[in-house]
Image (cartoon, rainbow, N blue to C red; front, side, top):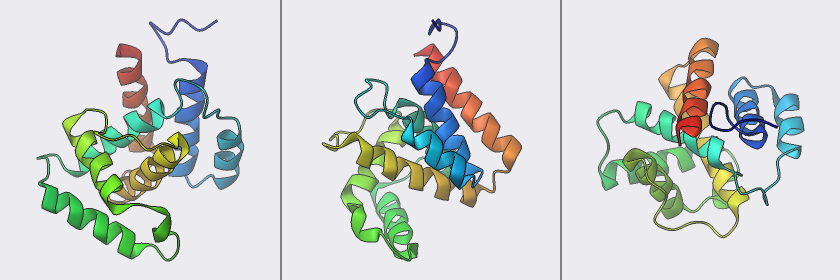
Length: 151
């Protein structure tokens, strides 16, 4: 049994591996790791949320106004070749605003998988915009693990 006071739980570690596979463009690993995640797990989404929060605060180190966040979301959705209709702009903006506040979103999506999906694609975009290479991506994941361990 893993001692969660000193290391992340198995489900959190699996989720960090899942996020890491996406950031590394390891789509086979991403699919395999994603299939092993359980949306019914009470920790589902915590690790992706931690990684997303770190990426958002790095992307907007001075914070951002509601207008800036809305503009970012509009640019993000406009850049998608397909799938933009799968995301609610207001919900994406709330996810980013909550990440910048380092709080939970004011409104939770009824499907935790939709929240994880939104955070994954936004994290990927932010990591690319920040130009984080493999070493910096591993640092981001390690920082997310440390935040979860401390929580």
